[in-house]
Image (cartoon, rainbow, N blue to C red; front, side, top):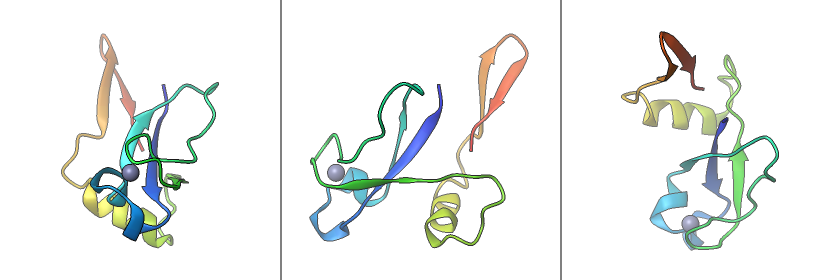
Length: 83
Ligand SMILES: [Zn+2]
């Protein structure tokens, strides 16, 4: 299941979850979120294309997840790289 990242459109109205961005696993069939599931304020989806380094949000996000595991074990000996 792909993992998406959302961030608040308006930080001043956001809750702590979406102010700093949150990750959510969604199937391809699910519509993208247009509001935070926690505070109901508007959010936008952060596009996480590999190699896209010009976006301020992307840099911000990469810095934030610098210590995170980027590989998830999906089954025996197979790892899925998460962007
Ligand atoms: Zn929120």
